[in-house]
Structures are given as C-alpha cells and as structure tokens.
Image 1 (cartoon, rainbow, N blue to C red):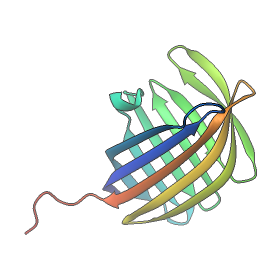
Image 2: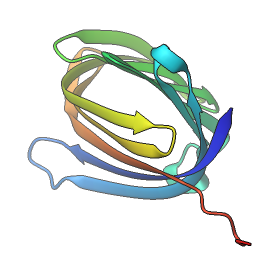
Image 3: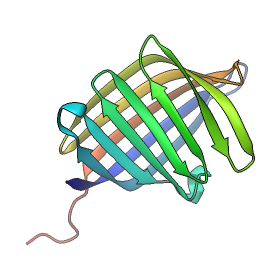
Image 4: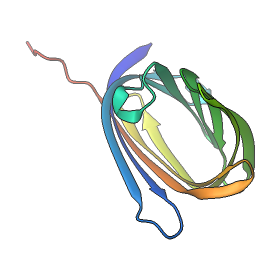
Length: 147
C-alpha cells in the first residue's frame, strides 16, 4: 500500500571552475514497500524544479537505484556503484545521451521513511558535464488532526 510521505531533497551540482549550485525542495509523495525488491518513491515535479508536469520515481533496490521521469521530461537514470550507465534524456527541446557514473550510493529506507544519498558524475553527449549529489530524506506525513 502507498504511504503518504514528506520528501526533502537537497541537490548539489558542481561544474569545474564554477560555484556549486544547490537546489532544495520539500514536497509530498508516496512510498511503496515492494518487499524483497526494495521501495518505490514517487512525487510530482513542480514549477520550482522546472519539470512541472513530470512524475519522478525512485526505484530503490539493494544494489541499484533507478530514477525515472515521465511527462514533460522523460528519462531513466541508473545508479550503480562502479558501473557507468547510458540512457536518453528527452525534453520538449530534443533528446540527449546521458551517462551516469556512480561514485557513492546509500539507501536506508523502511516503511516509515529513511534516507537516500547518491553521488555521481554526469556526461552529456559523452562530455563530462559535472558532479552531482542528491540527499533525500523521507518521513511519514503527519495527520492534520489527531484524536
């Protein structure tokens, strides 16, 4: 069963020779326990992220995390330490080839929430575009009223 959660995301994007760009977002989403397969975390992107109209899903498995976006932007990014994965990143302006090399990955989720951390390098059309880090905190959404 889906559980309503509050998702806090902090993303840091670093490009050589420039100041790191930090993005922070707090939104509501859903956490689904998939048993031995791990957890699925979903939320709707907003105007704040520039991806309004896109559903973002993190499929968290024991040795792999997959980020999928469907809507205005369509992409799939696979994070697996020690491996490089390529995929297409489709935007309203065209498609790009994206490579992901995961440096570190940690996920500690349970039915009440938890944390995900991913540190990776990204390549766009086979050229290194920068270093990125996600830190995601997931917690149960508290009811508005308690009896």
